[in-house]
Image (cartoon, rainbow, N blue to C red; front, top):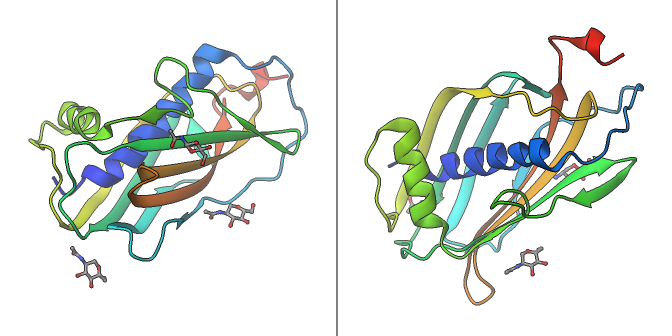
Length: 195
Ligand SMILES: *[C@@H]1O[C@H](CO)[C@@H](O)[C@H](O)[C@H]1NC(C)=O
Ligand SMILES: *[C@@H]1O[C@H](CO)[C@@H](O)[C@H](O)[C@H]1NC(C)=O
Ligand SMILES: *[C@@H]1O[C@H](CO)[C@@H](O)[C@H](O)[C@H]1NC(C)=O
């Protein structure tokens, strides 16, 4: 139960990566190393939003694909969240210095989920085997440091910068907002193939 909110974030992020495989953006190869953007995050909601993320840690950075990361997070929920938990994701990748929005394809990418609660509870149960049900209760949620396998996303560039915004709730009632910057290093295990 406590791991839920941070697992949301991790799952959204990793779901979004998978889009890369299916969409095959462009075949342009970048031979120059782009500037690596440090992993960073921040709450972007109002001070009285009921969901407040307290910590997010991901190691190492850039995130290797394929590879393993250690991730942990904590958040604080001040009200009981009703079972309808809308989530609005905006995922962008940096292409030639500009941010390009990754569209929602097959429920992955910059997607709007009218009710993310049950979807995420299901994913959480599948991943951990723990029982979690909607609505999520008020309290402090801690996701202890866990190893997560990051598959090979077949990104066309060796280093890709991403930024992700997750808005929970809707325009009438915002529940929380999180922004994350992260970079993905791809193909570190077979660099000779890039050239
Ligand atoms: C993301 O990185 C940019 C600079 O690259 C910075 O201005 C911004 O504050 C960062 N956002 C977060 C949420 O850390
Ligand atoms: C959320 O965190 C704040 C500050 O750390 C604390 O005062 C508040 O009691 C917490 N709320 C819940 C529901 O745990
Ligand atoms: C989702 O967020 C984006 C960017 O903030 C916004 O343009 C869009 O209108 C939002 N969609 C919904 C359904 O709230």
